[in-house]
Image (cartoon, rainbow, N blue to C red):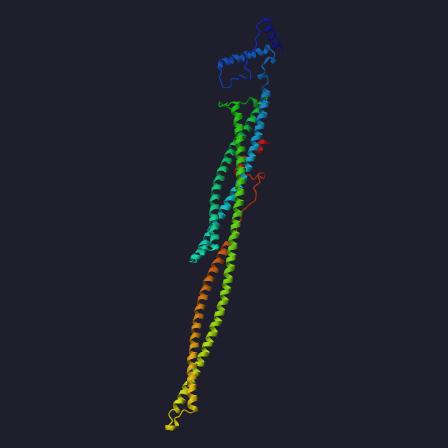
Length: 431
């Protein structure tokens, strides 16, 4: 210590007083220009010797306030670290919501495809009745419309899922960039803190630092990068959230449209089954009535046949008796009362037989018509029963599958982080 004061006195007495060299201020720090090694060594020697004879207060403000700049830089990077961390959380929540929406949309698409296949089977079943007029039937029209609606909604969902995957990929890309930037800021804060707390007396300060990286960027580029990264993440989250809401609205509208068309088709099927059941009951009653009529006509024909048979037998007997009377000799063969009554009886019996035969013929004609009508009714009943069976099978197919569209709202404030996001979680670094 005394030696240092003595040297200082000698310097003052000699009159060769050294002054500090001109240092750069904060506006002209040449970070991107390299000084020759010899000039730097001379400058450092001059600075070293000058500091023995000058007051430290003469050091320019830019150099004297270096610690303040380090602390200010530490605060600024910490603030941007918090902004990036908040952006990471928002992106992770939106990715989780999009993953939920993707599962919901894929499940809806699978249901649409299954239901569309079911509708194709119902349309094929109803069109297989080989009836030209049936194609204008309301049941066939409703089933065809529901099949078309299922196909169209499936195509729309397929396109929406492709857009969703693209947005999910963009969010995952920006999430990776945010994580990298967050880790860079964590490392920068650690190094800045090390500079602030640097102490030459500690053993760790004697360790050689890592090689200096030469790829520097300007402060404006750094600030622009941070702002652009956060703005891109915010825009992607905002666009994804809005698009996700539109997709939820689309799914709800599709569900309502399918439910309305399904109810309309079900109502047509029930109405058709009700009408076919009424027709079936009416045809059964008509068949029963025709069977009764056929039974009555058959019994009447049998009675007429018996009457004709009896009349013919009586006519044969009367004719035989009259033949016997006509064999009487000479004047005994006269037109007496027995002859007259037998002749009259034979005439009446012959007329009665002829009349009964006409009645029997008409009765047989009526019986034939009744039987043909019965065959027609039975054929119509069989076709109606077949149609009723087909419509009931369509109804069973139609009711066998119920669309289970999940309309639960995916809340953006309920994060569900995926495993890929948890692998590089910045929460611990921020703490």
